[in-house]
Length: 205
Image (tube, rainbow, N blue to C red; front, side, top):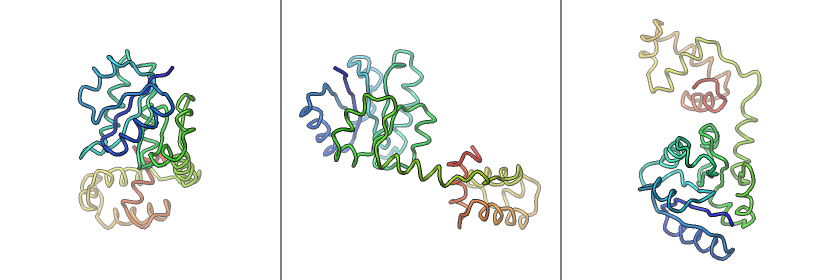
């Protein structure tokens, strides 16, 4: 039988997971945070681990744990499933070599998802819909010029138009013109929206 480990800091959901695994006679062990994660995994030796992305005030704790596990040879065969209420980080998780992505509300509603954990790349319905919408949102003709990419990349670093102008040796009004063109091309009303969409569509890093 597969062993499943999980890290989840919400006490109520932690208990529900424990009961869910126990009811279906699944060998599982959970922890409330990532303290001593490496040692815990070495001792328990699970084939699958569910990682809550947000732990306490650290909104990317699960992503950090994913990176750590992927660097360790002794965990190379472990299947890592991201567990979250927020499906907005799906692409980032898969880029970091997550094996699957389950939304908490889905796993509570559908016990079959636990069986799906044994599959190659499990992804729950809510996460799948979000991923599909993201890809549909990225149109093939959505191209930025190299200069527009540079402007938007600097904007993603929280630089103002005057700061971007100084870095690229441009006039501030020229940067504003670029921003208007970028927002038009990406069909976004704000710079923040354009940055998020460009990252999601891999137009900028």
